[in-house]
Length: 460
Image (cartoon, rainbow, N blue to C red; front, side, top):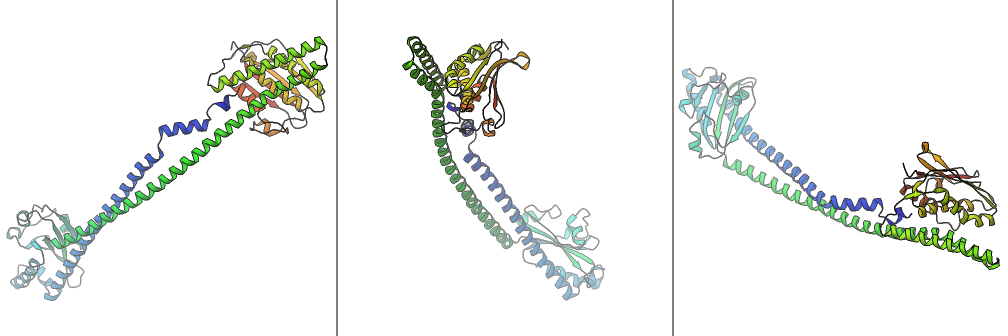
């Protein structure tokens, strides 16, 4: 009967389950750390690679500009087309000497336009061609090609011993003709630019230090915000739980007041009649008082059972007997208010319900119906079958002022009565829902109300 008020609410249960299975702060800490690390490491890697490539490219460009200035000054380009001539030997040797004396150069090759090695610091290389050299092809196409590493290429077998495994740069620098329209040769230089790599390493270190500090600061800020948000959410949840607890207490108190009011009204009426009736009438009034007291006691017992979590087991119930008992309870109240209470029961199968809870649901409907007719009217109670004999139907129809939409929708604590609690229909719906039944309300303002209770047949 109080099933929806004494049990934990759905939202509270969901929050409890959510706290058990999902820790927001922990997941946020893990995911935000993963995202910050991925972003920071990715950014630092890209910037480090960009810085390294840019500095190597710029160093190669400076070397290319220096060599081109030598070619321009000594007009060496005229000898690249015929390097075998006697006149070309001295100009080319002068150019080769300039190449060999570039800062940090450990090996150098000079290629003709057809890819043949014109000169090399390794005499064994002169006259050879490397057709599968992609960097050489790039340089012959007019673009500088730069590569760096610690393991030299196979065409320079002595470099590994000379360099001692240090990092080197390999640059293919195109040599242009006088009009700067055609590549007439390519200079390949191997260098060990320690100062350049030290500068690159210093820049890369600064990038990673800045990225690390940025990741730490960003993560600390995000985690701090999440921690503060969790504390705020925890306080709000506590306040919400306290508000729900107070609301539940108020709802239970209102439900108790609603459930006790009707029997108390009957007890008072019976006591007043007993004071003026003869002996037989007094005994009848006392019997009514006893019956109402027993009904109150049963109602309170059901309430306590549900408050302890002990469900009231439905049984096979004769709804005609329950309806007639409720009608007798409200007969005198209806008569005092000028309401004609008429009962028309039909042979129906037993329904699956709990007698006390079902009686409370019917009492709620009868009390509402009588109070809806302050100037008198008619209240018709009937029983029947529905859903092809699978359900028992109880109909409570009045000629009162009708039912507002808020009450038809089941809004909690809404009442049209000055002293109403707004719980009657809500409790009735919950009682019937607990018994796999339903409450249907029909009617408009000013045209009366028809309430239909439907319960499953006990054998169904």
